Image (cartoon, rainbow, N blue to C red; front, side, top):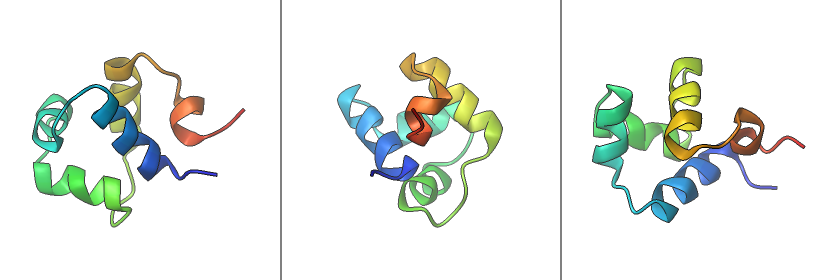
Length: 66
Protein backbone atom coordinates (compact mmCIF):
# COMPACT_ATOMS: atom_id res chain seq x y z
CA UNK A 1 0.00 0.00 0.00
CA UNK A 2 1.38 3.39 -0.98
CA UNK A 3 1.88 6.14 1.56
CA UNK A 4 0.18 9.49 1.13
CA UNK A 5 3.65 10.92 0.49
CA UNK A 6 4.04 8.65 -2.54
CA UNK A 7 0.54 9.54 -3.72
CA UNK A 8 1.05 13.31 -3.56
CA UNK A 9 4.31 12.94 -5.47
CA UNK A 10 2.64 10.78 -8.14
CA UNK A 11 -0.29 13.19 -8.46
CA UNK A 12 2.11 16.10 -8.88
CA UNK A 13 4.11 14.24 -11.53
CA UNK A 14 0.96 13.04 -13.33
CA UNK A 15 -0.14 16.69 -13.60
CA UNK A 16 3.32 17.76 -14.85
CA UNK A 17 3.83 20.13 -11.95
CA UNK A 18 7.04 20.96 -10.13
CA UNK A 19 7.39 21.02 -6.36
CA UNK A 20 7.83 24.78 -6.67
CA UNK A 21 4.49 25.16 -8.50
CA UNK A 22 2.60 23.08 -5.94
CA UNK A 23 4.29 24.88 -3.06
CA UNK A 24 3.26 28.24 -4.54
CA UNK A 25 -0.34 27.00 -4.85
CA UNK A 26 -0.26 25.93 -1.20
CA UNK A 27 1.36 29.17 -0.05
CA UNK A 28 4.45 27.44 1.31
CA UNK A 29 8.07 27.02 0.27
CA UNK A 30 9.40 24.40 -2.13
CA UNK A 31 11.63 23.15 0.70
CA UNK A 32 8.65 22.57 2.99
CA UNK A 33 6.64 20.90 0.25
CA UNK A 34 9.58 18.59 -0.49
CA UNK A 35 9.57 17.66 3.21
CA UNK A 36 5.90 16.64 2.88
CA UNK A 37 6.71 14.37 -0.07
CA UNK A 38 9.65 12.82 1.82
CA UNK A 39 7.61 12.36 4.98
CA UNK A 40 9.95 14.56 7.02
CA UNK A 41 6.95 16.76 7.96
CA UNK A 42 3.29 15.89 8.29
CA UNK A 43 1.02 17.41 5.67
CA UNK A 44 -1.27 19.99 7.34
CA UNK A 45 -5.00 19.46 6.91
CA UNK A 46 -5.39 22.78 5.04
CA UNK A 47 -2.81 21.58 2.51
CA UNK A 48 -4.51 18.20 2.15
CA UNK A 49 -7.76 20.00 1.32
CA UNK A 50 -5.98 22.30 -1.14
CA UNK A 51 -4.32 19.32 -2.88
CA UNK A 52 -7.72 17.62 -3.20
CA UNK A 53 -9.02 20.74 -4.94
CA UNK A 54 -5.93 21.09 -7.14
CA UNK A 55 -6.00 17.48 -8.35
CA UNK A 56 -9.80 16.98 -8.22
CA UNK A 57 -9.53 13.93 -5.97
CA UNK A 58 -10.93 13.03 -2.57
CA UNK A 59 -8.94 13.03 0.63
CA UNK A 60 -9.62 9.29 0.80
CA UNK A 61 -7.81 8.85 -2.50
CA UNK A 62 -4.75 10.75 -1.27
CA UNK A 63 -4.79 8.97 2.07
CA UNK A 64 -5.27 5.54 0.49
CA UNK A 65 -8.59 4.76 2.12
CA UNK A 66 -11.32 2.78 0.43
